[in-house]
Every structure is written in structure tokens, then in C-alpha cells.
Length: 148
View (cartoon, rainbow, N blue to C red):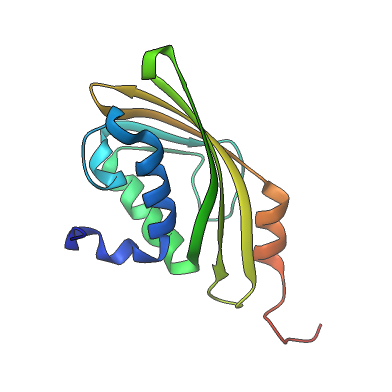
């Protein structure tokens, strides 16, 4: 049974489930947030309005994802490719997410590559790359059925 502490993040469940599956037995915890600590650095190498480039710690990461789930609902995450290096201390994951921008109803499809460093069975550092044009197009598109 899913942890009720994370019920508010259900709109991003496909992402969290895919990541947790990708990291497998390299990290502890049932949910993505169980695998991060107060020292975890979550870094994104792109600019999205309202999303910080660097987030430090579990509570700030959870707060940032509250904004994410307030703006985007994911229907699925797929095309997972996992590359384990350095005896599992570094994992590179490639994947896609598919969802809807809640404010406009516009479909959102994006591709990501994340480099995850693991230490003591927790995520130490997360570096994220994405298709910035796909995000820009979805976030700036007119509402479904709207006319310019």
C-alpha cells in the first residue's frame, strides 16, 4: 500500500515509480523521497520558470515537487534505459514522461537523462537534463481549443 505521506504527489507517481524501479536495490526506501536525505543535491541543467536550478535537501525537494504536481499531471513514464557505473555508485537513467499541463490541458511529453550518485544507499546527487524545447512548447501553448 502506498505511503499516505506522499498522497499529494500522486500526479507525479509515474515518474517516482519509474525512478524507484530504475534505482532498484541500490537505494533504501519504498518511495523516491525515502531515498533522498537532507544532504541530497538535486540539480537541473535547464531553466524552467518557478523551478530552481539547485535544490538541497529532502524538504526543499518535496516543496518543489508540490509545485510540479500543481502544474502537471503525468499519465505515464516509460522508455527507461538504465546504465550502472562505478559498481552501482553512479546510475544514468534515460526515460520519457507523458502528461497534461493542468492550466491549459495541453499534452506534455518530454525526454530526460538523469545522472544519480548514490552513497550509503541514498541519493547523494541528482543531475538532470531534459528536452527544454518540449517543456517550453507545452508550457507556452494555448489552452486546448483556445484561439489566438
